[in-house]
Image (cartoon, rainbow, N blue to C red):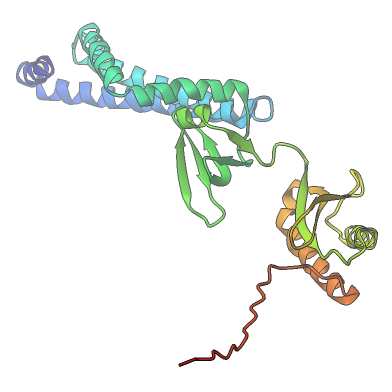
Amino acid sequence: MIELDATIKKMISESDPAELLLKLAGMVFTVLFIIVVFNLSQYFLGKFLKGKITPERNLMVKKVIRYTGFVLAVLFVFKSMGIDASALLGAAGIAGIVLGFAAQASVSSFIAGFFLLSEKPFSVGDTIRVEGISGVVLSVDLLSVKLRTYDNLFVRIPNETIIKSNLVTVTRFPIRRLDLAFDIAYREDPERVRKILLEIAASNPYCLENPAPFFGIDTFGASGIGVLFNTWFEKNNFWNLKNSILIEIRKSFEEAGIEIPYQKIDINISNAKEDTYG
């Protein structure tokens, strides 16, 4: 920093004003030229690679080009001012080591970012769930993954957290399965319930015919028979299917007189007359 101040003061004091102005103008023009060239390179290379590599890797390539242009512009300014960049780079290296020890979490997230980009457990636009947080992936960067939750909140999750956690990619595959579990009264015929549920699934536009829906008896509980009903759907129709099929099940069960039991408490109150003997 002292060397930089001394160099600037020496340049101003020893240079002719017109020559100094011309030198500064040339420096600014060259810096702008470097920035424009690297921005155009970033733009056209991103267009060229679009569709050939994943969006995450495309974004990484763009950032490498951008940072390279910035570093070259800074080095050119140092060289034009007569500053020895090697000393500054050496100092930057030492500072980088110190900062590396002070920010091990960031370094770990940086390394984890490369694992995410190479492993590709999800892509931009996928819905993921990490440590109870669900959302749509907005970007996958070298330090973190950005999500937009269903209630429109922005969430930043460090890459290190994702690597160490159980990650669920909800929209990884084109179809998913909806699992419904509920009880029916012991007096109900399970075969009749199965037919009604299969008819509901067949008439629902969001249920897939293949794989076919599944009905099974799970448990014999204290208040009723536990049954399972599973049906498949396209990954983007989760709420459409769940809302529509639950409404239809309730309506059909009510029309057919099928009872879904609930816990009841019977309280018997008896009046007892106490005789008192003297």
